[in-house]
Length: 120
Length: 108
Image (cartoon, rainbow over all chains, first blue to last red; front, top):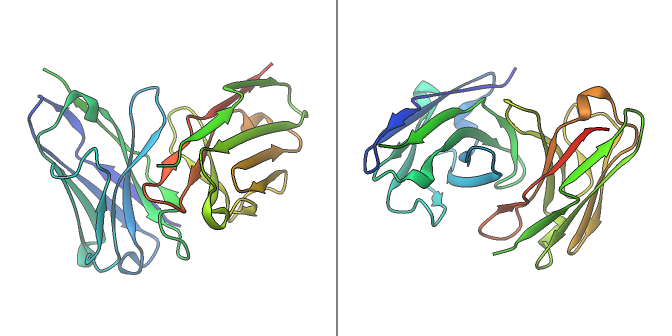
């Protein structure tokens, strides 16, 4: 069974940093592209970042470019999101999502999410 | 950027009724790269439909998708109690990928 479990969320002040993690199991993690998608409270979904299976190709949404860094450790079956210079508008539930095996940026499995709150 | 508009915002129906949800794109969605997701309160989204009309693994056949170009539809043939949720469309054919604002299907 595919499982994605996020951790690392919490309350952080504007301008602060946070590192999110996603532990994957139930599939060959190193063979799949992965993403972070976020959802502000009571709002819709926003794609944040993508990383290829090897980590060699990375994309970011314009809203986080230069502030967030996606990475992965295939030996540990883990995905990460380093978030710096956080703003109030970054407050959201952050989901780890697996790319469909045959289609870029189509999300076939999602974790339960971790809440990031940016507030003073 | 392709903007997706979903209608109606809320659909109030009874179990057993047919639900028809619309997703309209501001530009043509290439190769029908249009997906639908279901999200229940406090849960992660679940992929229902991709490629405009292909059901994802394990999705019941009461869910169907159709459309092309700029107009797409998700149909739930007979609503089950577990189908009351928010439904999002997503286009993944053009960068940046975008989601619609969602349609809430609630119990009448």
